[in-house]
Image 1 (cartoon, rainbow, N blue to C red):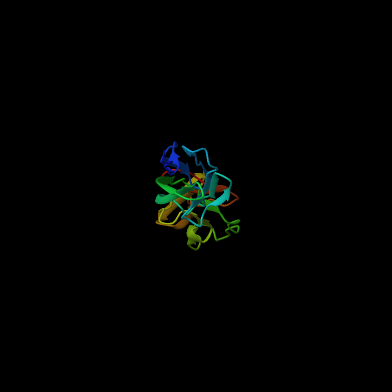
Image 2 (spheres, rainbow, N blue to C red):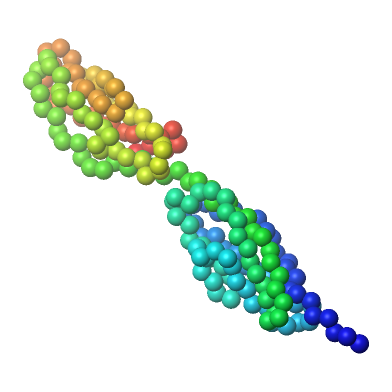
Length: 173
């Protein structure tokens, strides 16, 4: 009789999904018909390998679809399996980057314009911020994009607190 050596046979899923900033873990499994030890490697440097486990710690800029190949070897023959991984975009909340200085101006006049984009930013590239305000019984707030002007009621003077916020249609800061 003639013994025929067969390559390892994969028995694992081929499609994976993970959210940004999470770890994608792939457990490779292939068996060898001749019961030889199977070793593995992957053709993507983003992964760390421990035995048959491949891990990739994704970042917030990694959203997209990725294709790579896992190779199983019995020491003589190899098998390959193509893998598809989807890294899902995760919205990050806009960030308030510091205190807006107290605004002081004369009665019956407007304050100097405040540019809220100096105080808020969105860590997700391409997200457009819109702005709003809470509070302000005696002060009217006029927005022009990220720019804002405060106008007190006629003959009013005193102290008033308003709170500005920014949102990216998915979250608010």
